Image 1: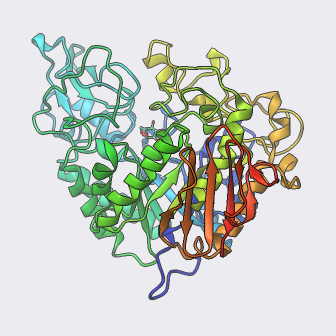
Image 2: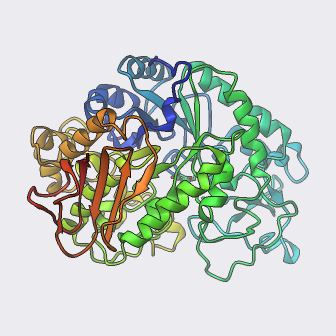
Image 3: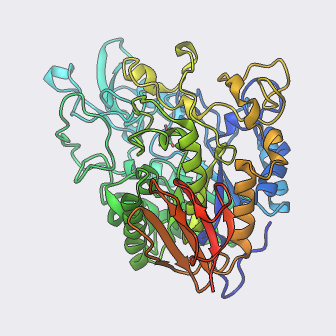
Length: 551
Ligand code: GLC
Protein backbone atom coordinates (compact mmCIF):
# COMPACT_ATOMS: atom_id res chain seq x y z
CA UNK A 1 0.00 0.00 0.00
CA UNK A 2 1.48 3.41 -0.85
CA UNK A 3 2.04 5.65 2.15
CA UNK A 4 -1.20 7.32 3.13
CA UNK A 5 -1.36 11.03 3.59
CA UNK A 6 -0.09 11.86 7.02
CA UNK A 7 -1.48 14.52 9.26
CA UNK A 8 -1.48 17.92 7.61
CA UNK A 9 -0.73 16.40 4.19
CA UNK A 10 -3.24 16.62 1.40
CA UNK A 11 -5.04 13.44 0.36
CA UNK A 12 -3.48 11.86 -2.72
CA UNK A 13 -6.58 12.31 -4.87
CA UNK A 14 -6.48 16.12 -4.70
CA UNK A 15 -3.60 16.26 -7.18
CA UNK A 16 -3.43 12.72 -8.58
CA UNK A 17 -2.83 11.94 -12.23
CA UNK A 18 -5.00 8.91 -12.86
CA UNK A 19 -4.51 6.73 -15.93
CA UNK A 20 -7.62 5.13 -17.38
CA UNK A 21 -7.09 1.49 -18.25
CA UNK A 22 -9.76 0.35 -20.69
CA UNK A 23 -9.08 -3.21 -19.67
CA UNK A 24 -10.11 -5.14 -22.75
CA UNK A 25 -7.83 -2.98 -24.90
CA UNK A 26 -4.79 -2.61 -22.63
CA UNK A 27 -2.84 -5.90 -22.80
CA UNK A 28 -3.88 -9.50 -23.45
CA UNK A 29 -1.94 -12.10 -21.44
CA UNK A 30 -3.78 -15.26 -22.47
CA UNK A 31 -4.20 -14.95 -26.22
CA UNK A 32 -7.98 -14.57 -26.45
CA UNK A 33 -7.68 -11.15 -28.10
CA UNK A 34 -9.16 -9.35 -25.08
CA UNK A 35 -7.08 -7.38 -22.59
CA UNK A 36 -7.09 -8.81 -19.08
CA UNK A 37 -5.98 -8.35 -15.48
CA UNK A 38 -2.74 -10.27 -15.91
CA UNK A 39 -1.97 -8.27 -19.03
CA UNK A 40 -2.20 -5.15 -16.89
CA UNK A 41 -0.02 -6.72 -14.19
CA UNK A 42 2.59 -7.41 -16.84
CA UNK A 43 2.62 -3.79 -17.97
CA UNK A 44 2.61 -1.94 -14.66
CA UNK A 45 6.22 -0.95 -15.36
CA UNK A 46 4.99 1.24 -18.24
CA UNK A 47 2.75 3.16 -15.86
CA UNK A 48 5.46 3.56 -13.26
CA UNK A 49 7.89 4.74 -15.92
CA UNK A 50 5.28 7.16 -17.24
CA UNK A 51 4.89 8.58 -13.75
CA UNK A 52 1.15 8.44 -13.04
CA UNK A 53 -0.19 8.13 -9.50
CA UNK A 54 -3.10 5.77 -10.00
CA UNK A 55 -5.03 3.67 -12.46
CA UNK A 56 -8.77 3.57 -13.00
CA UNK A 57 -9.78 0.21 -14.43
CA UNK A 58 -12.99 -0.09 -16.45
CA UNK A 59 -15.47 -2.83 -15.38
CA UNK A 60 -14.03 -6.31 -15.04
CA UNK A 61 -17.09 -8.09 -13.68
CA UNK A 62 -18.86 -11.04 -15.32
CA UNK A 63 -20.80 -9.50 -18.17
CA UNK A 64 -22.51 -10.47 -21.39
CA UNK A 65 -20.56 -7.51 -22.85
CA UNK A 66 -23.56 -5.85 -24.48
CA UNK A 67 -21.84 -2.57 -23.55
CA UNK A 68 -18.22 -3.56 -23.11
CA UNK A 69 -18.66 -4.67 -19.49
CA UNK A 70 -20.89 -1.77 -18.37
CA UNK A 71 -23.60 -4.43 -18.19
CA UNK A 72 -22.75 -6.34 -15.02
CA UNK A 73 -24.25 -9.69 -14.13
CA UNK A 74 -22.29 -10.28 -10.88
CA UNK A 75 -20.76 -7.40 -8.92
CA UNK A 76 -18.59 -9.57 -6.69
CA UNK A 77 -16.61 -11.52 -9.25
CA UNK A 78 -14.37 -11.13 -12.30
CA UNK A 79 -15.30 -12.14 -15.83
CA UNK A 80 -13.37 -15.34 -16.63
CA UNK A 81 -12.29 -13.83 -19.96
CA UNK A 82 -10.35 -11.12 -18.11
CA UNK A 83 -9.17 -12.90 -14.97
CA UNK A 84 -10.04 -14.09 -11.48
CA UNK A 85 -10.39 -12.54 -8.03
CA UNK A 86 -6.96 -14.03 -7.22
CA UNK A 87 -5.49 -12.12 -10.19
CA UNK A 88 -7.09 -8.95 -8.87
CA UNK A 89 -5.62 -9.51 -5.41
CA UNK A 90 -2.20 -9.96 -7.00
CA UNK A 91 -2.72 -6.82 -9.09
CA UNK A 92 -3.63 -4.78 -6.02
CA UNK A 93 -0.55 -6.01 -4.16
CA UNK A 94 1.78 -5.35 -7.09
CA UNK A 95 0.32 -1.95 -7.94
CA UNK A 96 0.57 -0.85 -4.31
CA UNK A 97 4.15 -2.12 -4.06
CA UNK A 98 4.94 -0.04 -7.16
CA UNK A 99 3.37 3.07 -5.61
CA UNK A 100 0.23 3.04 -7.78
CA UNK A 101 -3.30 3.37 -6.43
CA UNK A 102 -6.15 1.43 -7.97
CA UNK A 103 -9.60 2.85 -8.71
CA UNK A 104 -12.35 0.51 -9.89
CA UNK A 105 -15.52 1.21 -11.83
CA UNK A 106 -18.94 0.70 -10.27
CA UNK A 107 -21.97 0.54 -12.54
CA UNK A 108 -24.91 1.09 -10.21
CA UNK A 109 -27.49 2.83 -12.41
CA UNK A 110 -28.27 -0.45 -14.12
CA UNK A 111 -27.44 -4.13 -14.05
CA UNK A 112 -27.10 -6.49 -16.96
CA UNK A 113 -30.35 -7.99 -18.20
CA UNK A 114 -28.66 -11.28 -17.30
CA UNK A 115 -28.28 -10.33 -13.65
CA UNK A 116 -30.24 -12.82 -11.49
CA UNK A 117 -32.34 -9.94 -10.12
CA UNK A 118 -33.59 -8.98 -13.56
CA UNK A 119 -34.19 -12.57 -14.59
CA UNK A 120 -36.32 -13.01 -11.43
CA UNK A 121 -38.16 -9.76 -12.13
CA UNK A 122 -39.11 -10.84 -15.64
CA UNK A 123 -40.03 -14.37 -14.53
CA UNK A 124 -42.14 -13.07 -11.62
CA UNK A 125 -44.66 -11.31 -13.85
CA UNK A 126 -46.54 -8.06 -13.17
CA UNK A 127 -46.72 -7.18 -9.49
CA UNK A 128 -43.89 -9.52 -8.47
CA UNK A 129 -41.82 -7.95 -5.67
CA UNK A 130 -38.65 -8.48 -7.73
CA UNK A 131 -39.95 -5.94 -10.26
CA UNK A 132 -39.74 -3.20 -7.63
CA UNK A 133 -35.95 -3.15 -7.95
CA UNK A 134 -36.28 -1.93 -11.54
CA UNK A 135 -38.75 0.31 -13.35
CA UNK A 136 -41.47 -1.95 -14.72
CA UNK A 137 -44.55 -0.05 -15.85
CA UNK A 138 -47.65 -0.67 -17.94
CA UNK A 139 -47.52 0.93 -21.37
CA UNK A 140 -49.76 3.70 -22.64
CA UNK A 141 -52.39 3.24 -25.36
CA UNK A 142 -53.59 -0.02 -23.89
CA UNK A 143 -50.03 -1.18 -23.31
CA UNK A 144 -48.73 -0.81 -26.84
CA UNK A 145 -46.82 2.46 -26.30
CA UNK A 146 -43.99 3.06 -23.83
CA UNK A 147 -44.95 4.57 -20.46
CA UNK A 148 -43.27 7.92 -21.27
CA UNK A 149 -41.06 9.70 -23.81
CA UNK A 150 -37.66 9.07 -22.23
CA UNK A 151 -34.76 8.29 -24.55
CA UNK A 152 -31.66 6.08 -24.41
CA UNK A 153 -28.11 7.41 -24.44
CA UNK A 154 -27.42 5.06 -27.31
CA UNK A 155 -30.33 6.29 -29.42
CA UNK A 156 -34.01 5.35 -29.56
CA UNK A 157 -36.46 5.08 -26.69
CA UNK A 158 -35.52 4.11 -23.17
CA UNK A 159 -38.19 1.42 -22.75
CA UNK A 160 -38.47 -2.18 -23.88
CA UNK A 161 -41.56 -4.34 -23.58
CA UNK A 162 -41.24 -7.79 -22.00
CA UNK A 163 -43.01 -10.98 -22.85
CA UNK A 164 -44.77 -12.08 -19.70
CA UNK A 165 -44.50 -15.63 -18.31
CA UNK A 166 -47.86 -16.41 -19.96
CA UNK A 167 -46.35 -15.61 -23.37
CA UNK A 168 -48.23 -12.34 -23.91
CA UNK A 169 -46.64 -8.92 -24.49
CA UNK A 170 -46.72 -7.21 -21.13
CA UNK A 171 -45.07 -4.45 -19.12
CA UNK A 172 -42.23 -2.21 -20.20
CA UNK A 173 -38.93 -1.71 -18.36
CA UNK A 174 -36.70 1.35 -18.35
CA UNK A 175 -33.14 1.42 -19.70
CA UNK A 176 -31.44 4.79 -20.13
CA UNK A 177 -28.66 2.93 -21.92
CA UNK A 178 -29.02 -0.32 -23.93
CA UNK A 179 -32.01 -2.69 -23.48
CA UNK A 180 -29.48 -5.14 -21.99
CA UNK A 181 -28.92 -2.58 -19.18
CA UNK A 182 -32.17 -2.25 -17.16
CA UNK A 183 -32.16 0.72 -14.76
CA UNK A 184 -32.34 -0.01 -11.04
CA UNK A 185 -34.85 1.84 -8.89
CA UNK A 186 -32.72 3.46 -6.19
CA UNK A 187 -35.76 4.19 -4.04
CA UNK A 188 -35.87 0.47 -3.31
CA UNK A 189 -34.15 -0.32 -0.02
CA UNK A 190 -32.91 -3.72 -1.20
CA UNK A 191 -31.06 -1.98 -4.05
CA UNK A 192 -29.46 0.46 -1.60
CA UNK A 193 -28.41 -2.29 0.79
CA UNK A 194 -27.05 -4.51 -1.94
CA UNK A 195 -24.75 -1.76 -3.14
CA UNK A 196 -23.65 -0.89 0.40
CA UNK A 197 -22.44 -4.44 0.58
CA UNK A 198 -20.82 -4.37 -2.88
CA UNK A 199 -18.91 -1.20 -1.91
CA UNK A 200 -17.63 -2.89 1.23
CA UNK A 201 -16.68 -6.00 -0.74
CA UNK A 202 -14.25 -3.99 -2.88
CA UNK A 203 -13.07 -1.54 -0.23
CA UNK A 204 -12.28 -4.50 2.05
CA UNK A 205 -10.26 -6.01 -0.79
CA UNK A 206 -8.09 -2.91 -0.79
CA UNK A 207 -9.13 -0.79 -3.74
CA UNK A 208 -8.21 2.87 -3.30
CA UNK A 209 -11.16 4.37 -5.06
CA UNK A 210 -14.38 3.90 -6.92
CA UNK A 211 -15.53 5.58 -10.12
CA UNK A 212 -19.27 6.07 -10.09
CA UNK A 213 -20.59 5.29 -13.56
CA UNK A 214 -23.43 7.40 -14.97
CA UNK A 215 -23.95 9.13 -11.61
CA UNK A 216 -26.63 11.65 -12.74
CA UNK A 217 -28.82 8.84 -14.05
CA UNK A 218 -29.31 7.18 -10.69
CA UNK A 219 -32.42 9.07 -9.49
CA UNK A 220 -35.63 9.63 -11.44
CA UNK A 221 -38.39 12.13 -10.78
CA UNK A 222 -41.28 10.36 -8.98
CA UNK A 223 -44.14 9.52 -11.32
CA UNK A 224 -41.74 9.33 -14.27
CA UNK A 225 -43.26 12.27 -16.15
CA UNK A 226 -42.54 12.94 -19.82
CA UNK A 227 -39.33 14.86 -20.46
CA UNK A 228 -40.75 16.71 -23.44
CA UNK A 229 -38.10 15.35 -25.81
CA UNK A 230 -38.69 16.33 -29.42
CA UNK A 231 -38.93 13.41 -31.87
CA UNK A 232 -35.52 11.99 -32.75
CA UNK A 233 -33.86 13.83 -29.84
CA UNK A 234 -30.39 12.73 -28.81
CA UNK A 235 -29.12 12.38 -25.27
CA UNK A 236 -27.75 15.81 -24.46
CA UNK A 237 -27.02 15.62 -20.79
CA UNK A 238 -24.82 18.72 -20.75
CA UNK A 239 -27.72 20.83 -22.06
CA UNK A 240 -30.62 19.49 -20.00
CA UNK A 241 -32.24 21.58 -17.29
CA UNK A 242 -34.92 20.08 -15.01
CA UNK A 243 -34.86 16.78 -16.81
CA UNK A 244 -36.88 14.04 -15.04
CA UNK A 245 -34.32 11.29 -15.75
CA UNK A 246 -31.03 13.13 -15.38
CA UNK A 247 -29.33 15.04 -12.57
CA UNK A 248 -32.45 14.89 -10.41
CA UNK A 249 -31.70 16.41 -6.98
CA UNK A 250 -32.59 13.25 -5.04
CA UNK A 251 -29.55 11.53 -6.56
CA UNK A 252 -27.35 13.18 -3.96
CA UNK A 253 -28.83 11.10 -1.14
CA UNK A 254 -27.23 8.03 -2.69
CA UNK A 255 -23.81 9.62 -2.67
CA UNK A 256 -24.15 10.81 0.93
CA UNK A 257 -24.92 7.23 1.87
CA UNK A 258 -21.84 5.99 0.01
CA UNK A 259 -19.60 8.65 1.50
CA UNK A 260 -20.58 7.55 5.00
CA UNK A 261 -19.41 4.04 4.09
CA UNK A 262 -16.19 5.25 2.42
CA UNK A 263 -15.34 7.35 5.47
CA UNK A 264 -15.25 4.27 7.70
CA UNK A 265 -12.13 3.09 5.80
CA UNK A 266 -8.58 4.31 6.24
CA UNK A 267 -6.26 5.34 3.43
CA UNK A 268 -8.07 8.27 1.80
CA UNK A 269 -10.40 6.16 -0.33
CA UNK A 270 -11.75 8.10 -3.28
CA UNK A 271 -15.11 8.38 -5.00
CA UNK A 272 -15.01 10.02 -8.45
CA UNK A 273 -18.17 10.54 -10.42
CA UNK A 274 -18.82 10.39 -14.08
CA UNK A 275 -21.32 13.23 -14.28
CA UNK A 276 -22.07 15.02 -17.51
CA UNK A 277 -24.40 17.80 -16.36
CA UNK A 278 -25.37 21.31 -17.28
CA UNK A 279 -22.42 23.45 -16.22
CA UNK A 280 -19.96 23.66 -13.34
CA UNK A 281 -22.47 24.73 -10.69
CA UNK A 282 -24.59 21.57 -11.14
CA UNK A 283 -21.37 19.57 -11.23
CA UNK A 284 -20.16 21.04 -7.95
CA UNK A 285 -23.17 19.50 -6.19
CA UNK A 286 -21.68 16.03 -6.67
CA UNK A 287 -18.58 16.98 -4.69
CA UNK A 288 -20.05 18.76 -1.70
CA UNK A 289 -18.16 17.90 1.49
CA UNK A 290 -20.46 15.00 2.43
CA UNK A 291 -20.73 13.52 -1.08
CA UNK A 292 -18.17 12.32 -3.62
CA UNK A 293 -14.57 13.58 -3.55
CA UNK A 294 -13.98 14.46 -7.19
CA UNK A 295 -15.74 14.35 -10.52
CA UNK A 296 -14.67 14.26 -14.14
CA UNK A 297 -14.78 17.63 -15.78
CA UNK A 298 -16.45 17.09 -19.14
CA UNK A 299 -16.78 20.79 -19.90
CA UNK A 300 -13.00 20.85 -20.27
CA UNK A 301 -13.09 17.79 -22.51
CA UNK A 302 -15.80 19.28 -24.68
CA UNK A 303 -14.20 22.71 -25.10
CA UNK A 304 -13.04 23.53 -28.60
CA UNK A 305 -9.44 24.52 -29.23
CA UNK A 306 -9.69 28.24 -28.74
CA UNK A 307 -8.24 30.34 -26.00
CA UNK A 308 -11.50 32.06 -25.02
CA UNK A 309 -13.43 28.81 -24.58
CA UNK A 310 -10.66 27.03 -22.73
CA UNK A 311 -10.00 29.91 -20.41
CA UNK A 312 -13.71 30.27 -19.67
CA UNK A 313 -14.00 26.57 -18.80
CA UNK A 314 -10.98 26.70 -16.51
CA UNK A 315 -12.28 29.80 -14.75
CA UNK A 316 -15.81 28.44 -14.49
CA UNK A 317 -14.61 25.14 -13.06
CA UNK A 318 -12.35 26.66 -10.45
CA UNK A 319 -14.97 29.22 -9.42
CA UNK A 320 -17.72 26.60 -9.03
CA UNK A 321 -15.61 24.11 -7.09
CA UNK A 322 -13.99 26.58 -4.70
CA UNK A 323 -17.09 27.04 -2.50
CA UNK A 324 -17.44 23.28 -1.93
CA UNK A 325 -13.70 22.80 -1.36
CA UNK A 326 -13.28 20.09 -4.00
CA UNK A 327 -10.28 19.93 -6.34
CA UNK A 328 -10.79 20.15 -10.08
CA UNK A 329 -9.96 17.31 -12.41
CA UNK A 330 -8.99 17.78 -16.05
CA UNK A 331 -9.68 15.22 -18.72
CA UNK A 332 -9.30 15.26 -22.51
CA UNK A 333 -10.20 11.74 -23.64
CA UNK A 334 -11.84 8.53 -22.46
CA UNK A 335 -13.25 5.27 -23.78
CA UNK A 336 -16.46 7.19 -24.61
CA UNK A 337 -15.08 10.09 -26.62
CA UNK A 338 -13.36 10.68 -29.94
CA UNK A 339 -9.63 10.75 -29.23
CA UNK A 340 -8.46 14.34 -28.89
CA UNK A 341 -5.68 14.09 -31.49
CA UNK A 342 -8.48 13.64 -34.02
CA UNK A 343 -10.89 16.11 -32.41
CA UNK A 344 -8.31 18.86 -32.30
CA UNK A 345 -7.53 18.26 -35.97
CA UNK A 346 -11.06 19.17 -36.99
CA UNK A 347 -12.42 22.58 -37.82
CA UNK A 348 -15.00 22.15 -35.09
CA UNK A 349 -12.71 20.81 -32.40
CA UNK A 350 -15.11 20.35 -29.47
CA UNK A 351 -16.34 16.89 -28.48
CA UNK A 352 -19.77 15.45 -29.17
CA UNK A 353 -21.54 13.17 -26.72
CA UNK A 354 -20.99 9.42 -26.45
CA UNK A 355 -19.50 8.97 -29.89
CA UNK A 356 -22.30 10.75 -31.76
CA UNK A 357 -19.50 12.62 -33.44
CA UNK A 358 -20.21 13.15 -37.13
CA UNK A 359 -17.04 12.25 -38.97
CA UNK A 360 -15.51 15.39 -40.41
CA UNK A 361 -12.06 15.53 -41.98
CA UNK A 362 -9.25 15.71 -39.46
CA UNK A 363 -5.76 17.11 -39.97
CA UNK A 364 -3.90 14.68 -37.72
CA UNK A 365 -0.62 16.57 -37.79
CA UNK A 366 -2.38 19.66 -36.48
CA UNK A 367 -4.34 17.53 -34.04
CA UNK A 368 -1.20 15.95 -32.62
CA UNK A 369 0.51 19.31 -32.27
CA UNK A 370 -2.46 20.61 -30.31
CA UNK A 371 -2.78 17.41 -28.30
CA UNK A 372 0.83 17.72 -27.16
CA UNK A 373 0.23 21.34 -26.18
CA UNK A 374 -2.97 20.30 -24.41
CA UNK A 375 -1.02 17.72 -22.39
CA UNK A 376 1.18 20.50 -20.98
CA UNK A 377 -1.87 22.65 -20.32
CA UNK A 378 -3.78 19.83 -18.59
CA UNK A 379 -0.87 18.76 -16.41
CA UNK A 380 -0.17 22.35 -15.35
CA UNK A 381 -3.66 23.09 -14.04
CA UNK A 382 -4.47 22.96 -10.31
CA UNK A 383 -6.01 19.74 -9.02
CA UNK A 384 -5.91 16.29 -10.61
CA UNK A 385 -5.95 14.93 -14.14
CA UNK A 386 -7.17 11.84 -15.96
CA UNK A 387 -5.22 10.39 -18.88
CA UNK A 388 -6.79 7.87 -21.21
CA UNK A 389 -4.63 4.94 -22.27
CA UNK A 390 -2.88 5.65 -25.55
CA UNK A 391 -3.00 9.43 -25.31
CA UNK A 392 0.58 9.27 -24.05
CA UNK A 393 1.37 7.70 -27.44
CA UNK A 394 -0.51 10.37 -29.39
CA UNK A 395 -2.94 7.80 -30.78
CA UNK A 396 -5.63 9.13 -33.11
CA UNK A 397 -9.20 7.83 -33.34
CA UNK A 398 -9.48 4.85 -35.70
CA UNK A 399 -12.20 6.12 -38.00
CA UNK A 400 -12.15 3.43 -40.65
CA UNK A 401 -12.96 0.30 -38.66
CA UNK A 402 -14.89 -2.03 -40.97
CA UNK A 403 -18.59 -2.00 -40.15
CA UNK A 404 -18.64 -5.71 -39.43
CA UNK A 405 -16.29 -5.35 -36.45
CA UNK A 406 -18.19 -2.51 -34.73
CA UNK A 407 -19.44 -3.56 -31.29
CA UNK A 408 -20.62 -0.39 -29.57
CA UNK A 409 -24.41 -0.62 -29.06
CA UNK A 410 -24.64 2.91 -30.49
CA UNK A 411 -24.07 1.51 -33.97
CA UNK A 412 -27.16 -0.70 -34.06
CA UNK A 413 -29.31 1.56 -31.85
CA UNK A 414 -28.75 4.53 -34.15
CA UNK A 415 -29.88 2.51 -37.14
CA UNK A 416 -26.24 2.24 -38.23
CA UNK A 417 -25.80 5.99 -38.58
CA UNK A 418 -23.48 6.71 -35.62
CA UNK A 419 -20.43 4.45 -35.49
CA UNK A 420 -20.10 4.98 -31.76
CA UNK A 421 -17.08 4.63 -29.56
CA UNK A 422 -15.08 1.68 -30.92
CA UNK A 423 -12.60 3.97 -32.69
CA UNK A 424 -11.12 5.14 -29.37
CA UNK A 425 -11.07 1.59 -27.97
CA UNK A 426 -8.68 -0.07 -30.40
CA UNK A 427 -6.09 -2.16 -28.47
CA UNK A 428 -2.82 -0.45 -27.54
CA UNK A 429 0.29 -0.90 -29.68
CA UNK A 430 3.19 -1.96 -27.44
CA UNK A 431 5.96 -3.15 -29.75
CA UNK A 432 6.87 -4.71 -33.07
CA UNK A 433 6.12 -3.59 -36.59
CA UNK A 434 2.77 -5.23 -37.27
CA UNK A 435 -0.49 -6.03 -35.47
CA UNK A 436 -1.09 -7.15 -32.79
CA UNK A 437 1.90 -4.97 -31.81
CA UNK A 438 2.59 -6.89 -28.59
CA UNK A 439 -0.99 -6.41 -27.34
CA UNK A 440 -1.56 -10.15 -27.77
CA UNK A 441 0.84 -12.93 -28.71
CA UNK A 442 1.84 -12.90 -32.39
CA UNK A 443 -0.79 -14.44 -34.59
CA UNK A 444 -3.70 -13.57 -32.28
CA UNK A 445 -6.37 -11.18 -33.61
CA UNK A 446 -7.28 -8.51 -31.07
CA UNK A 447 -11.01 -7.89 -30.53
CA UNK A 448 -10.74 -4.78 -32.70
CA UNK A 449 -8.15 -4.56 -35.50
CA UNK A 450 -5.24 -2.13 -35.10
CA UNK A 451 -4.10 0.00 -38.05
CA UNK A 452 -0.81 -1.02 -39.66
CA UNK A 453 0.17 2.65 -39.49
CA UNK A 454 0.56 2.40 -35.71
CA UNK A 455 4.00 0.79 -36.09
CA UNK A 456 5.64 4.16 -35.44
CA UNK A 457 3.46 4.84 -32.40
CA UNK A 458 4.23 1.78 -30.25
CA UNK A 459 5.60 2.19 -26.76
CA UNK A 460 8.83 0.53 -27.88
CA UNK A 461 9.19 2.91 -30.84
CA UNK A 462 8.71 5.98 -28.66
CA UNK A 463 10.44 5.01 -25.44
CA UNK A 464 13.98 6.06 -26.33
CA UNK A 465 13.07 8.98 -28.59
CA UNK A 466 13.33 12.24 -26.62
CA UNK A 467 11.03 14.02 -29.06
CA UNK A 468 8.22 11.44 -28.85
CA UNK A 469 4.84 12.10 -27.31
CA UNK A 470 5.58 9.40 -24.73
CA UNK A 471 8.74 11.26 -23.69
CA UNK A 472 6.80 14.53 -23.46
CA UNK A 473 4.26 12.99 -21.08
CA UNK A 474 6.98 11.32 -19.04
CA UNK A 475 8.98 14.56 -18.75
CA UNK A 476 5.86 16.54 -17.83
CA UNK A 477 4.84 14.05 -15.15
CA UNK A 478 8.36 14.12 -13.64
CA UNK A 479 8.46 17.91 -13.58
CA UNK A 480 4.96 18.02 -12.12
CA UNK A 481 6.35 16.26 -9.06
CA UNK A 482 9.36 18.52 -8.68
CA UNK A 483 8.64 22.07 -9.88
CA UNK A 484 7.51 24.59 -7.31
CA UNK A 485 3.99 25.69 -8.07
CA UNK A 486 3.04 22.32 -9.53
CA UNK A 487 4.33 19.97 -6.85
CA UNK A 488 2.79 22.10 -4.10
CA UNK A 489 -0.48 22.66 -6.01
CA UNK A 490 -0.27 26.45 -5.88
CA UNK A 491 -3.32 28.40 -7.05
CA UNK A 492 -3.57 29.65 -10.63
CA UNK A 493 -3.27 33.29 -11.60
CA UNK A 494 -3.77 34.36 -15.21
CA UNK A 495 -0.91 36.04 -17.01
CA UNK A 496 -2.05 38.30 -19.83
CA UNK A 497 -0.05 37.71 -23.01
CA UNK A 498 -2.49 38.11 -25.87
CA UNK A 499 -6.02 37.28 -26.96
CA UNK A 500 -5.26 33.82 -28.42
CA UNK A 501 -2.85 32.76 -25.73
CA UNK A 502 -3.68 30.88 -22.54
CA UNK A 503 -1.02 31.76 -19.97
CA UNK A 504 -1.02 31.39 -16.22
CA UNK A 505 1.27 31.24 -13.24
CA UNK A 506 1.27 28.80 -10.36
CA UNK A 507 3.10 30.26 -7.38
CA UNK A 508 5.96 32.75 -7.80
CA UNK A 509 8.12 30.73 -10.18
CA UNK A 510 6.08 28.56 -12.56
CA UNK A 511 4.35 29.66 -15.78
CA UNK A 512 2.49 27.75 -18.49
CA UNK A 513 1.96 29.39 -21.89
CA UNK A 514 -0.16 27.87 -24.67
CA UNK A 515 -0.07 29.61 -28.02
CA UNK A 516 -3.45 29.06 -29.73
CA UNK A 517 -2.91 31.90 -32.17
CA UNK A 518 -1.82 31.54 -35.79
CA UNK A 519 1.46 33.42 -35.17
CA UNK A 520 4.67 32.46 -33.35
CA UNK A 521 4.81 33.98 -29.87
CA UNK A 522 8.16 35.49 -28.81
CA UNK A 523 9.25 33.94 -25.51
CA UNK A 524 11.57 36.79 -24.52
CA UNK A 525 10.64 38.08 -21.11
CA UNK A 526 8.21 35.23 -20.33
CA UNK A 527 10.67 33.05 -18.42
CA UNK A 528 13.12 30.17 -18.96
CA UNK A 529 11.51 27.25 -20.79
CA UNK A 530 11.94 23.92 -19.02
CA UNK A 531 9.63 21.88 -21.26
CA UNK A 532 8.11 22.53 -24.67
CA UNK A 533 5.59 20.62 -26.73
CA UNK A 534 7.03 21.88 -30.06
CA UNK A 535 10.32 22.97 -31.54
CA UNK A 536 12.94 24.89 -29.64
CA UNK A 537 13.66 28.44 -30.73
CA UNK A 538 13.12 31.98 -29.53
CA UNK A 539 9.42 31.83 -30.22
CA UNK A 540 6.58 29.46 -29.33
CA UNK A 541 5.08 28.20 -32.63
CA UNK A 542 1.28 28.18 -33.10
CA UNK A 543 -0.51 25.30 -31.32
CA UNK A 544 2.36 24.59 -28.98
CA UNK A 545 2.91 25.12 -25.26
CA UNK A 546 5.78 25.69 -22.88
CA UNK A 547 6.43 25.35 -19.18
CA UNK A 548 8.69 28.11 -17.95
CA UNK A 549 10.44 28.99 -14.77
CA UNK A 550 10.16 32.65 -13.92
CA UNK A 551 11.97 34.92 -11.50
C1 GLC B 1 -20.71 5.43 -18.80
C2 GLC B 1 -19.56 4.65 -19.37
C3 GLC B 1 -19.96 4.17 -20.73
C4 GLC B 1 -21.18 3.30 -20.61
C5 GLC B 1 -22.30 4.00 -19.85
C6 GLC B 1 -23.36 3.04 -19.42
O1 GLC B 1 -21.00 6.56 -19.55
O2 GLC B 1 -18.39 5.42 -19.37
O3 GLC B 1 -18.92 3.50 -21.38
O4 GLC B 1 -21.63 2.94 -21.88
O5 GLC B 1 -21.84 4.62 -18.69
O6 GLC B 1 -22.93 2.25 -18.35
